[in-house]
Amino acid sequence: MAHPAVSLPARKTPPVPQRKIRSLHLLSTSPTASKAAATRLFQKFAARSPLPLGKLRAELIPDSSWKRAEQALRPTAAQTVARLANSLAFSTRTWQSEADAIDWLLAPHIQLGGATPFSMLRTETGGRLVEQLMAALEYGFPV
Figure (spheres, helix red, strand yellow):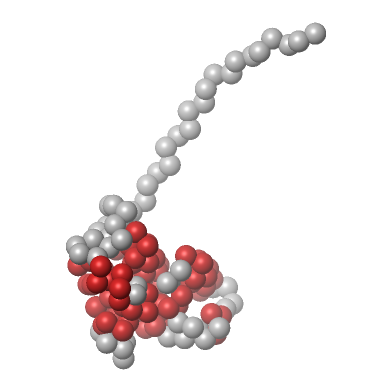
């Protein structure tokens, strides 16, 4: 004997609250990042690094991609810049100083096999490793 079909009322899922990180406001409004905003971000790092601005930027975004972009970066480069901005905001909260956060991101770390957190931000996987390391530091876990 077949059972009659029972229709259940459709459930509405509540909207996910959107959080904005202050340092990402220029980058999170669209899928592309402004090249000018990305340049300002890289200049902060270059001011504390022995590498010149162009070489430092090329560690994360290849010269060909950078030169091809006019006013807005393409999605892959924009994602890389967003990872960098997010990592800077997270580490600034942990270290209580943007200068100290930049120094930490530019210094080699043993948990990353001697690589710098900055260089790991080139990929999504590397960005996740950096986030895990920063979370461990923020919450006082051994690293």
